[in-house]
Amino acid sequence: MDTLIPAPVSASPAPAEDFAVTAATAVHATDDAAPVAEHLAEVLRAGTGHPVPVLAGPAPGGAIALVLDAAAVPHPEGYRLSVTSRSVTLTGSTPAGLFAGVQTLRQLLPARAGTEWVVAGGEVRDQPRFAHRGAMLDVSRHFYTVAEVKRFIDQIAQYKLNVLHLHLTDDQGWRIEIRSWPRLATHGGSTQVGGGTGGHYTQEEYRDLVAYAASRHVTVIPEIDVPGHTTAALASYPELNADGVAPELFTARGNATGFSSLATGKEVTYRFVEDVLREVAALTPGEYLHLGTDETHATPEEGRLEFIDRVLPIVARLGKSVIGWHELLRSPGLPVSAVPQYWGRESSDPLMAAAVARGNRVLLSPAHKVYLDMKYDLSTPIGYKWAGCIDVADIYDWDPGTYMDGVPETAVLGVEGPLWSETLTSYADVEYMAFPRLAALAEVTWSPWSTHDWPGFAARLAAHGPRWEAQEVNFCRSPQIAWST
Image 1 (cartoon, one colour):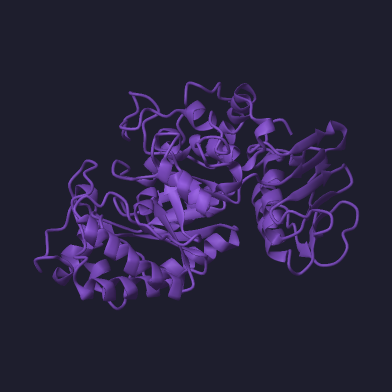
Image 2 (cartoon, helix red, strand yellow; image 1 turned 135 degrees about the vertical axis):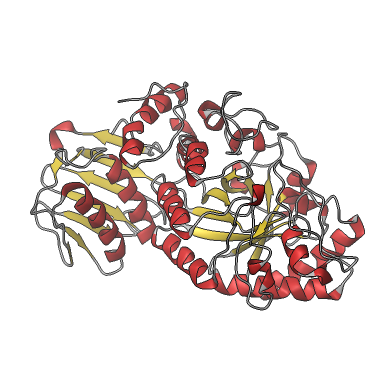
């Protein structure tokens, strides 16, 4: 149990109580726990070749039992895992808690198939520190297929991250089908950075991604970035431009931003925004819509204020709450349900502190701590360095609960690691920039601060290298870690 990531609240190893998975092993679960039980059984079947059936009813000796018991585990994402030589019992108050416990159980198994599969004995008691533990994937600058996004969902879920923020639209590409404005996807999504083919998700494909994420207890938050970052939309529909003339599609390399804007003085703009948000909201059952609202350098301030004032009620009518990058706070009168996402590099921001004082909760994504598109060091072949080079220790070595002046831990909804894709031309690049750093982010967001210990974490992380090798993850072998073989 000394290699678990994220570190649990408590773990009591019992080496004499290891549990062997055999051809007779079954997983027992009640109806509500059955989908999580099937997920676990799939993992065990793939690793052992054993049948591992999922059965209802009480578990006999030699079985793995998944139990829902809110009295025993009151936290909705908490769990208790007990492993003896006779049985394995995983208890949670909800399926989400059981799923988190399954990810811990997986780490107690061997890294590779074909070895003797034994679950390390002992007991783990655990629950998360923050509710929102997220990763953002930018599919706009470079497009990733449905299969690749599903792989990313599986990878983040293994480390108990529970939010996938999909950056669906930007200057370089519009990636989701909007049936009332079809050229957004067919024209605006037809290319990407460097002039590649691009692509988009049909509504059926997007709905499938959302359902797949839900099966891994990951919530998808879609981002439609407005009123800036909109060249793909402006090129698709000239009426959205102030002069009525469509620009060329934008495919330039580099990280140029802030040069585009919807025409905030035109009524067609608000009809467009309402249509888009209505269709996206209908496809996305989660609580939030992310509106971007950052880097609006090309939008006159008066127009930006009018735009926010008119769009926020649209979101409310759709039954959703708004997340926006922290520039959203420049608009007065935001509802307390709005969530600013801070990407700055300062530990003090008066607008953030004022929002918290009014009752808003916040997301933290400080660029110099968790931007996963930053280089590990100056030799990293991809990525940027404008926020500094970020290696594993940099992501690990900060406390979200005390990071910002005037933002106590109780006001922090959670933490998110954005992965912008201007330089990431393949999914292998995504993996290289995400891992091992996402494992450090997972521990920062899940584990109690009392467990925070860089030498201990680095030693635990080293043992995950063989797991990633077995899963064919293209991870970066950071020199900060003495990787296991």
